[in-house]
Length: 178
Image 1 (cartoon, rainbow, N blue to C red):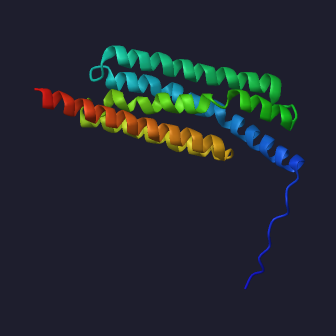
Image 2: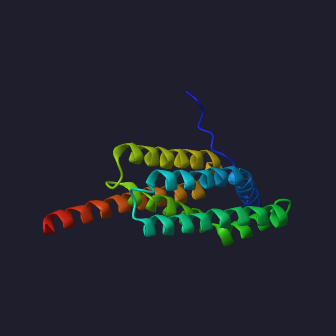
Image 3: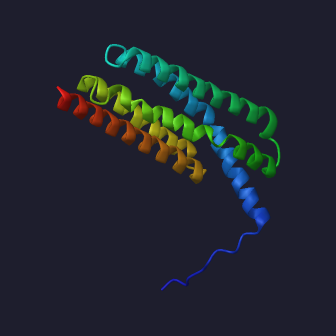
């Protein structure tokens, strides 16, 4: 039987260093994650152009582009001001901008309302596949910082589920009133 060896208790300075390194790793992968998001927006536009209500599709596009641009700007600011700084600076920077990840996830999750039960099954499949790919890519790129990964994925899943429930309820309401 193996002896039960508990890890040494980390000092606050060690915990700060580890968290700073995890944030550094997360931010290093941020550029490629946003490039994927930027690539998927026109894919959604092309697939859903005839299926989704145009004002909703355009609103989603503008908001999602704004979120992608904000994340690019945050990454650039990080590289300019924080990347070579100490771990306290990493934590301060990230605590200021951590809200951007769940906001971005909520926008991608809301895209489900554009195609779920509206678009032909082949178009829905493409959108679901793109959303699943985005989620998997996000797991890969944000797994170094578990709170961010959990926040992003939970927001993405809950928003997508909420959009599906909303679409189901609106479909049921319209069929029961006719």
